[in-house]
Image (cartoon, rainbow, N blue to C red; front, side):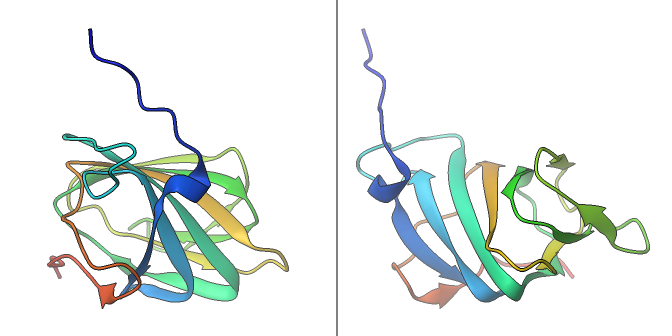
Length: 133
């Protein structure tokens, strides 16, 4: 029988991403995290500070964003950005445009699931997957 991996956010791997301005991610479930080494998906927590953003981008990986805390604007290829608030889920098919802006006064916290997971990258080094323009 295979055992479950039970981890907390603090067990994750901190990451910086090229698309981020005033923010970072923590890879909690990911092939890079020896405490929860997944094969086919990843789960991250993104933190975006007030005034920060994740620039609109797209890639082959399918994702789901779940806004846990904070408010702002979301860019989802719908023309104009939309208001976003806690409790909203955003399914991002492969190559769907997506980006976030924290227009609030508190930290924005977003859970992100990705399939397949992005590759292993050095901690805290600014890197990005090949982005489809």
